[in-house]
Image (cartoon, rainbow over all chains, first blue to last red; front, side, top):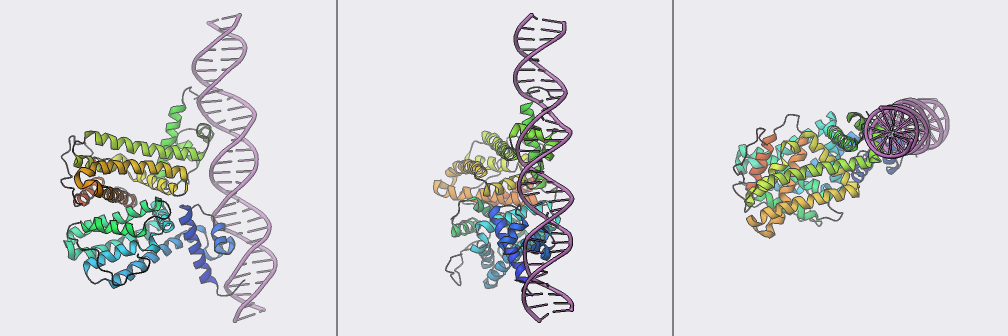
Length: 207
Length: 207
DNA sequence: AGAAGTTGATTGACTGGTCAGTCAATTTAG
DNA sequence: CTAAATTGACTGACCAGTCAATCAACTTCT
């Protein structure tokens, strides 16, 4: 023990443990002691690094947001046409790393936290703005700038709604089916067609 | 004090106070003492009537579910055509009593509770089944029984998604706009058209 | 009518447990 | 030796749940 320079890994372990426990529990009612134990250390060390429970929670939220952004960026990189850009956002949203039951529960927890915590609300707001901006950028060539903002709102809501319902379904629910049904619904929206673009690379998990 | 036969009103006061506080706080971390105080009594009386905090929570959840069902039933009563039945469910979902910011937050809280509480999950499941059944019944004549179940899922998800995003928006957000945008999106779905049926009675609040 | 008993309403005060946060002390790497 | 890592043990606050004791309304018996 007491390896020097361990702070970064310790912090990351703590954050991942917190995300996992919050997701499993579906609530912020997880003790710092339990999080720290899961990350293989004492609660005192967690307090030493983060200063308080709130900071652990906030950093965990940042972590989830960052992971999602990473996923979106990766998918957008491969997209060339506007329709592909829309689909890239869908693929990112329903990637198995994001659509995992516990991850979705953690997202919901943070949505609720944002409801009464201004810092959390700010974090979520930038995420919403970025997603909205991405969607509008992808949709504008398809449907006009005017309709794009409405469409973006609809699509974002649809994704969130499918998420929230997914978290309630029993364990081994359909991963790919959610993406399919979402694509199907969106393909009917005005100006949008042939969403199911042939994938450049077909991943083994089929996300 | 100590009026006899006060139990029913006391219980109802407690439930309404609990719903309000849970909605305001966006979490179940409200003390029985605070709920009871808001309902104008001591915490001991709350325990006397409900036996424990869990039961207060569960009954509060039942109450929200019941209120929503009431709203749906009322709206469905007036609908004659299939399209009107779909719109009735939308109107119920976005009625100002249901779409209130705190009410939505309370719903989200219960969604999350269902995630780790089997009894809550059962309650939510019957609500989901009822809504799904209502939607399929309304949609089948429009799009065929096959497509109806998929459409029902999409519409239910869209409603939930608009809900969850609404709860995050600043206070005086648009009540009617959400309904409009939802109608617009749904009207593009295959088999569905002319959703904006002329209302039989136009309510002053415009819900 | 009124005394006496019954039952529900109601609460202040208490308890046992839990948890966030602190701290002084120990260990280890450089 | 110094600075970071690490923890066991402690504390102060808070909270769900309990309990014994009042209080107010009805009933019944005389």
